[in-house]
Length: 395
Image (cartoon, rainbow, N blue to C red; front, side, top):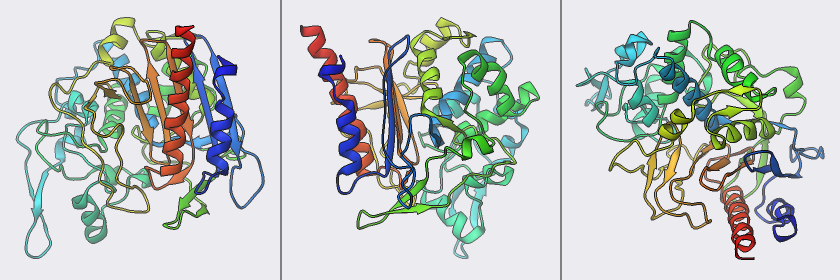
């Protein structure tokens, strides 16, 4: 495949174009091993240290698949009922009220929800929770009422009102952070400890953590802000290194190589290189569309420094599984219908194609989300990869 598929040229092209990206690491795997590992560019634009395949990233919402895995393990063991009220396991979620707007004085109008939030709703983003960078209401609560941002990793940042009654709509938000609270409530351990013993060790993931340490900090790719003119400014950005809450929705740091081990687990029906993480039937169940006829909606960025308007495969229906996006139709890249994948705020993207046995991850550290240069490069990589597979099949 290598001579047919010049991935290095795509990475270098994205770094050297204008506007380009500071640095990118990308990998593609089959069921057994990585079949491509590449890096191009620099860690930070104010330095000349080359970015490398072993560098660490703030992986943001690509954390969600790991928290989802921990939830599914507890379901397998009969310790978690997805349809039971989530407050049975994480009592604080029972305190959340629905916001019906603001009164004439700018005070939030709150009321009790019509039904309890279940862990299933949390896994599917139908509980009523949002994010301040995608929700005008949350952004107003942050600006006028001091609602803390999720990047504070505080208990208080989770205690947001619901944007609608549970199970009445789809809205991307802090649902998977609450799944982390459910896991902690059931296990009596911090989420990072649960991940370490139940997921990272069986998969051989040695460089993924909620608590940024000196080893990872030495090889951390720098965060950059994209200006309106396309320029890139390095940022001194770090999530709290001793977070009050291990945020299951976005809080991990890790390497792309580590994440490929997670992708291979999903390709291999739950098996990791050092032991089984999930049962095959759990994996098969989890990756299905669990939203029914509902479809996920495009993102409207309301905080320009954090997110642009963004959508995967515009015009195509997309569903949600536990806990990935599912493309209902074949994607323009060649990704087959029913494949899964997702993204992280700093323009990290991955896909998992269980049908053909391939997956890939593209990592940059650029804000806001939906960066044209990074996302286009990722789509180009995935498209070139599927073109090479189809060519190989035809031959």
